[in-house]
Length: 562
Ligand SMILES: Cc1cc2nc3c(=O)[nH]c(=O)nc-3n(C[C@H](O)[C@H](O)[C@H](O)COP(=O)(O)OP(=O)(O)OC[C@H]3O[C@@H](n4cnc5c(N)ncnc54)[C@H](O)[C@@H]3O)c2cc1C
Image 1 (cartoon, rainbow, N blue to C red):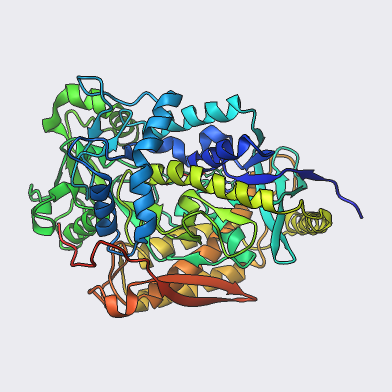
Image 2 (image 1 turned 180 degrees about the vertical axis):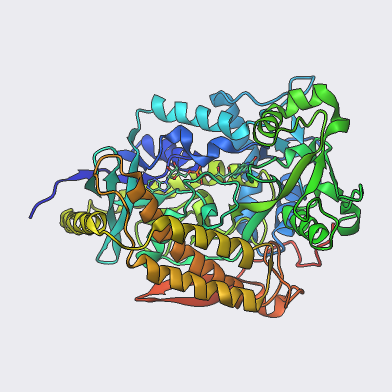
């Protein structure tokens, strides 16, 4: 049996900001190709609203940025990685500006910066409330200029490893239903977050954590998976994000008694405390009976007045009108917390190197760890650009040092993947992937959410394992080969179930409260036992869990108050 494969030096999986930035770095010297399950401009990076952090202000400094990030992380971030992020931030922003991103301006023509949660200075550069849209389009233009090869709407189904080294991948061409093999010296995972493991999420439907599941299956560990960010202000009903920029511009959070309740939780920072604190405050207000309809609170922008809302938050106004029938110029916005960001991901060092030779990870899919237990707003877009460049360089060095692998392993695995998908498509009368997905989302929302406790987590783990069993007898429901999105959704579900289990295992294991992970039965931070990263490795059929040291540095571990 011979199956021809596509050959490249390096493959990048994902065409969000991090994947594009990696590919740009590699394109000077190497034959690099990007494989992406949606058109690059539909990657979730496009929907980033509020902005990107860089210490451009006269009184600001990289040290202040680094300190805010480490404190925001509840001291779990690796301080050496944070230092790189903060030092490289101005360069990343200016580079993108030079490429053409139209940042909003101050009256004297400088890049405008707004205050964001947990930051000591207005440090968040923005393009109105469509920052990700601007950055992604600009960066995409650069990939076109460089002539980088794209495989658009190809779904990566597995990584190929032989002799302890990654040598390629298999991918489903969605338009034709064909499975193809790719041979390469290195693979960079840039597949974004896994928000859709939860039912209520601000993430795009495509954010299913494929990269984490692919990595886990070839023996690369995942790290800190229990740290899931819940954004405090998501539109009630649809969970569409209302950017932190709305509070950065001066918005108030108000409960059903008309009180600006943040003074109880973060008297100094008020609405601009970090997200974990504001999300818990809103949940507490609602649980204690001070919410509207026992569900949500109000985000009030009316005092900002029409002109400012139209200039700085035009996209938010549109979202509120279209999806909630509320015009924030005249009425407060109903908001509640929902899943937003994955702090955990594929375990790497600060160069994106995983423990599996030839495999790299970057962006939201990786865990370097720069966000620790809680990410600050504006640091994630920054991470994609800063580390996209660095990981691209490192993957290039590795590529130069190794031979092109033998494509026969890729051919063999491609053949097996074809057989597997054929079988899956033809299997009738089994369980519905839609039902399994809905139950998974509800389980994670209710039992592994903002507030956690052991009996709920145990119930969640039992349910997820039961769903994994049900998945063994799943029927896609459609057997046609061309554009079979039901098949893609089913493969994504398989990945998400794997991650739901790991997240819940991590949440159960971590018997403390730190950052976004809050245990009602262990409400204190426990630095003696848990100032550690959690690591999850698949060993045959079970997940091995261990704790590893955090890279501490000049910022002393302290109590975290705002
Ligand atoms: C609504 C919203 C607003 C946000 N606002 C901000 C903000 O203002 N500031 C900030 O700093 N951060 C923000 N974030 C977070 C930030 O946008 C993301 O963390 C970041 O853009 C992720 O970029 P990425 O390149 O890692 O992944 P993404 O942009 O998510 O791209 C993932 C890519 O992987 C590809 N992919 C995935 N699986 C497969 C597969 N199996 N096969 C092939 N391709 C695959 C997809 O096609 C896609 O191209 C926001 C997030 C959301 C959801």
